[in-house]
Each structure stands twice: as structure tokens, then as C-alpha cells.
Image (tube, rainbow, N blue to C red; front, side):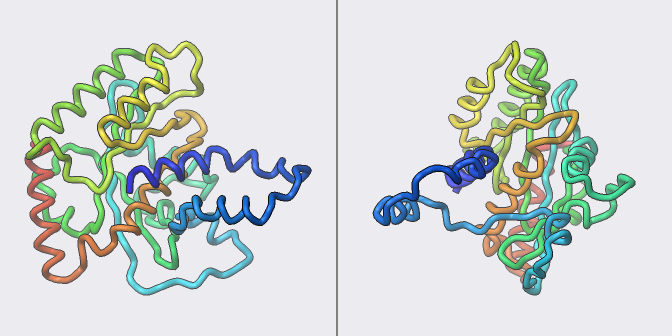
Length: 257
């Protein structure tokens, strides 16, 4: 599942160059068939602002889905409120920032509306009932790509969290590491090294601009796509509630007050 998401990240990063292929020769039928066999058929998540701006009305299925993203930020990196702002900034959605406005973070995927909520890790032990409301929970570690100290702090936080989990498996749908920076430059930790660190630990890796927010929309969209693929994992019936409550208790242990 995570490897599919990484493929999607590469596709999204390269999508800007596809429009320049108009002058290239048309591929053969065999080549087109071979390419179609390698394309990920998973539906793509679309930010609600793009849905509303679309001239075509997309059909919507019943049953809004919910996802909480817990954000652990190292020194100098975006916290959960900053990620809210960056998502809004990248999408140029709305005039005033309002973290209580669910429409700022809604995504549309395969006919379902996913409400995404960013959360701080502090106080999770006292919010078990609240966390039970979410079907999907993900974790993002953010660090300042220009600071070795910030990277080291992020690594320490990740290893500490994993050491508190049974068998070292984090109780999240997905874990993501986000480098907050404007480019490769003279970064003390290269993006290649950071991505290798993430891949070895089965985490997703993304680059996000702390100024424009570039990258955050696709990053959250990929998490929504993973949630869509696992939407039957935590159902809204009583059995699902029991599972979600146990998960919330595990999160309380993982992030004690």
C-alpha cells in the first residue's frame, strides 16, 4: 500500500512535465498496453477547492469519511496549525484562516468526501473519546531541512515513538516524514538520505515549502488515497467503535500527557 503511494508521489511530481509531450510521437498500441498495465488504478484524492471550481459536478456518495493527522514537529518545522495554513495557502482557498472550518481540509476521492483534521500530539491520552470519532489516523513528522539539529530531533522522536509500540509497529494507517525547505541547496541532510531513512522504516517522504506550502496538498491527498483503500478497516458500527477505542488507548500510551 505504501509503495503504491510512493509511486503516486512520483507521478504527481512529474505531472507538470506531461503537458510538454504533445510533440512526441504517438506510442504504439503495444507500448500503450504495457503502460496501462503499470498504471496505478487507485482513485485520486482531490482537494475540495478544486472540486468546487470544477465545471463538472462530481457525484457524491453517502457517508463522509474522517481522518486525523497527528503532527510531530521538530525545532523550526511546521506544527499542526502551520500545516493548516500551508494547505490553505497552496490552494489559495478562502480569505481568512479558520482551523474550525472543515471545508478547508476536505478531500474528494472516488465519490466520498474525506474530512481531514490536523492534531497536535499533546494531550492525546485525555482525548480517547474524541479520537474514536476518526476512522483513519496518520502521523507526520516534520523537520527543518536546513538544520541538522532539527533532523536529529525528528529522528529521536521517531525512534522514541516506535520503541513505545508493541513490536515497534506504530498504530497508524501511515507514517510520513516531511522535509520543510525550499530546495536541496546545501542541506546538512540531503533529501536522498532522508528519503532512504523513511523508506527503510516503511514511511512516506515528502518535501514541503514552508513559505508557499507547495507539496502539502499532494502529500495529504496521498494519505487520503491510502485511507480510501482502507476505509473498511475501521467501520462505523459497534465493532469498528471497539477497534477505534483500542487504537485511541494505544495512542494515549504512545503520546502521554
